[in-house]
Image (tube, rainbow, N blue to C red; front, side, top):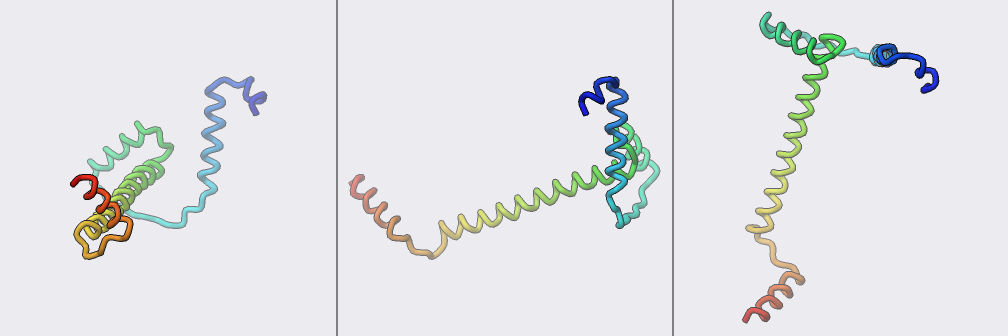
Length: 116
């Protein structure tokens, strides 16, 4: 591949690359549809952002941005759930009614004997 591309300039190589990406995108089956109504001002903002982003189409821009934001929301939610679980484990360990195990009792005795 490198030998074949050696005779082309960067613009041609980029066009070949982008064309192949477009072919790959076209092969992905997209059976679901989402319809949105937005104000004209919002649509202008979205269109301008899409033009600046370099996304090939308005739909791909919207999908990419919404998906990225949705993944951030899900990741934050997963961290909150994990931190809630950690909080519960911590408070149960500190304030719960569980009795110390044998190792903890022995460690406490060693500590007391060294500090008395």
